[in-house]
Amino acid sequence: MNSIFSDAQKRLVEVFRHTALTDDVQEKLKHPKLSMCVSIPVRMDDGSLKIFTGYRVQFDDTRGPTKGGIRYHPNVSLDEVTSLSFWMTIKCAVMNLPFGGAKGGVIVNPKKLSRLELERLSRGYIRAIADIIGPKRDIPAPDVYTNATIMGWMADEYAQIKRQQLPGVITGKPVHLNGSFGRESATGRGALHVLQEWIDLKKCHAEDLSIAIQGFGNAGYYFAKLAHEAGFRIVAVADSQGAIYSREGLDPTKLMQHKQEHKELGTMLYCDGSVCDLQHYHKLSGSELLELDVDVLVLAALENQIDKHNADNIKAGQILEIANGPVTSAADEILAKNGIPVLPDVLANAGGVTVSYFEWVQNRAGYYWPEEKVNARLKKCITREATAIFSLADEKKISLRTAAYLQGVNRIAGAISQQGTREYFLNT
Ligand code: GLU
Image (cartoon, rainbow, N blue to C red):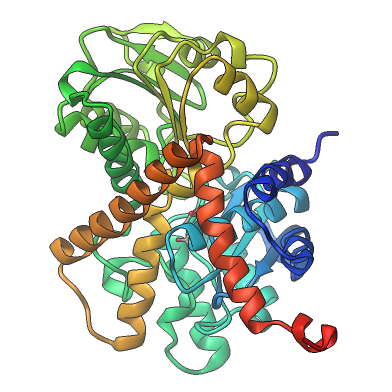
């Protein structure tokens, strides 16, 4: 089986060609600092006991406490969580946030659980990893199939374990439970700022551009909604059950209303309805959507969606990665050869963790900001880092991904070498 983590590491080899990094840095970025595998016993509603497997991987904490979401998915594995924790390390450094990277996951199909089972699982996961997390150590957040409600349960469980209120242990909480305004829409909003900055550079206009979106979860939906409001034409949307197409353009808010009407009854947290239930639109398969001739292809689902098998069929003008790792390193090369730029995940989806950082700051200060302030600060931070990456790519004639990694890795390297023991042992 192909390892996601070894593929993720291939990007570093390319980065190391463009920057002189010590062996210490190269060695450190190859290994996670801490990997934890836990069994989570959950009493099911029928009285039976079920054991779920969960992970938390802290990749590197040189720049600060580790940060990264928790994923609930049947395909979660240690390899996947390790890769995601590595990407979080790069992402936080790309955004210059004072965090290292981490990730967590539980092997589960949460749509098959009742709401109480899901709450027991979420609390059980926090009990299992409580010793290695904390506002100054490792700060989880939502990821695929986890959300504000689940973060609220987890924060409460942690407060009970520690016998004190420590809201900064987890971000992406509900606004009524010390969450931040603007966190829910932050990933989609940040991605739109990155795209806007990119098209401004290319002297293009939103009204002239068509977009196809793979993935209609939290990030994909908010991106679609905000992009639609900004004047882009969303011509196709796919969720896990299939895709729809409309040449004239789709209204994301209407699509979401439809999905919400069909909330499954178990947890009331996930939607059962699919965009493909909507009768009056042309239906596509998920892979047909990827191969549409659009200006922007947005990947907002899961990793490894474009690989060496389908990369040559991609006709989009550019790709925006809202999911983590949706393009493999082999596909990167094919897309580059075909002249298709990729706005990389570690920049394009960094709006989420940036507003998580704002939430953590607000929790620690005990002083809460209005939504306009959160949104304005997000725009300022992500636009600043995007502009720097675009000029670095142009100056060095490298891909946007390599430029983003270069920016992140140089910051991590600075921290590692200034903390380091190497000079001491070399006696210099
Ligand atoms: N899960 C999100 C990501 O992959 C957010 C992480 C966070 O807010 O800490 O970036």
